Length: 219
Image 1 (tube, rainbow, N blue to C red):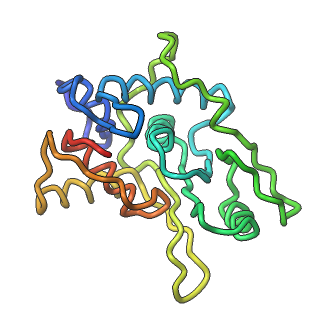
Image 2 (cartoon, rainbow, N blue to C red; image 1 turned 90 degrees about the horizontal axis):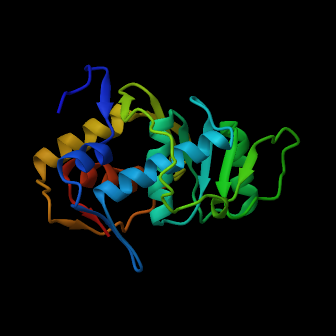
């Protein structure tokens, strides 16, 4: 496999889809996806996000419970160049509305829309049920290489001593942190990692990167 320039990183899902297409990527109560299937589904969601108007650099808030769909949406946004703002699903609606206003998101993907407490709240609401999660073979292939310094996520701090801070992370922040962690605590194909941490927490997203880079399975 030809590696991209040093300022680009291959999406780890796509890299494993090429080197180990039948390897198990995700296991849920009612579904199991190989790396090839997950790669195809991610490309499918990129196309649908584009059709919804999401563009490179847009801040897209994700107010969702942890699920297979949430994982796919995250990596679809990375490939598209959007910025995934992961919202604490345990907050009450007023706090969620305040968080959305602070990050000035362009889109909210959620099954609910919080009551607006801000007159300037102008984001577009997308219900994830509007997406097709079945491969129809017609999705547009997007580049699977991602700019290393691309703005990737906005994750709120815990706010234990003050108002939670919205912290911006680049794709390489997540990627190289996972590489370093895997060097210290080896993770290999055949290992399974329980996704026990929420995806609005940086440690939850770290589980995704660590597992996909290693070719392990997420449960």
